[in-house]
Length: 435
Ligand code: CMX
Image (cartoon, rainbow, N blue to C red; front, top):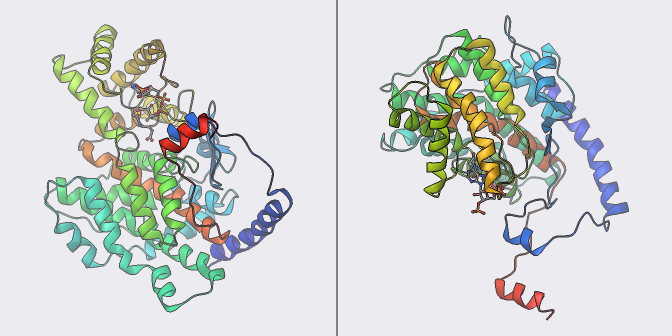
């Protein structure tokens, strides 16, 4: 057993004792009341899940095991000559709960490199789809085809002790994370680069190698990928992709099945697909206005037109956050450092000045501020990754780090099958009438 796996087991055994103790001694303690509106309106604000990897504060944004995004950028190990945190380090932090050393990060980089081989039938399954299929569909078909490799599924079919579920889930997690960049890059090169694929470079870190396989050798793009893979990795447990992965995993579906389910949720426009919608929206605005940088008045008119057509302004608003997303700010800082004069980035910043007061004036939008998706597209376009339908796949590769680290914890803590109670509106009517 590798030392990270051993360390995880020690941490899991410790937390298991604490959780059992909490349930035994405080199991009847009431956390909060649930209102009828919450039940109808997406269960907003109901504490109903435990996720160890990260915690979201409505005003401050996400913290991964207690560390904010600026703190991660400061404390996590970097690539040689680089300034952005390596995603391997964030994965270690989320899984183990401690900051990694340089050696821990190198260990993960080389372990994922060794495990990155993708069997041919996965590529064949992707090839069976028409070239017009959305990249998220191709990506998910690839993940589903890879499910043949699940250690958990094989072991379960032969019969395993439930005490060992975590061990097979850990193996699946490591293998799946190792292979995702190859599958994602395959989708990109197939759809947009005439099927000219690029072999992995075993000397590079996980995100650097992903950038390389996509076809980008620019150091700036590699740095962007490292930052991108860190900031999109996790956003506590209730968001659609994390919650779905956890929910499906609670049926003891293996990591491949669970993660694929989560990715289908990420592919929705109110969640991860918003990153493609943002850039599409900005490019359409620019085209309608005849190119160049629009004025604030023109942006304002375009925002009002979007709203009057009954559409949302993509990249703005959030179910939990109530301030500018620190993931947006991290990307803004990256842009200020690396591409301060980029035209599209300037438009993103002008949209940031224009949209919040308009959404605020509507009176119903709970958070008028930008989320992670409002900025990412402009950065990618700058480096030449203009094929915006692919953006959610990048989000998905990153999201694997958080939701699969969480899945390891789910199995290590022996969390239960998720099965909340549902009622009918007839039941609600009788309930309010006191029947
Ligand atoms: N533009 C226009 N209207 C918006 C809005 C936006 N950006 N954000 C919220 N609203 C509207 C809602 O549609 C809702 O209107 P109705 O009452 O008419 O249905 C009202 O304001 C209240 O919604 P809310 O409580 O503020 O927001 P929710 O928690 O219901 O939804 C979210 C959150 C993210 C789905 C929503 O803000 C939205 O649709 N944003 C645009 C899409 C987006 O950027 N999604 C990415 C989120 C981050 C991610 O997961 O990647």
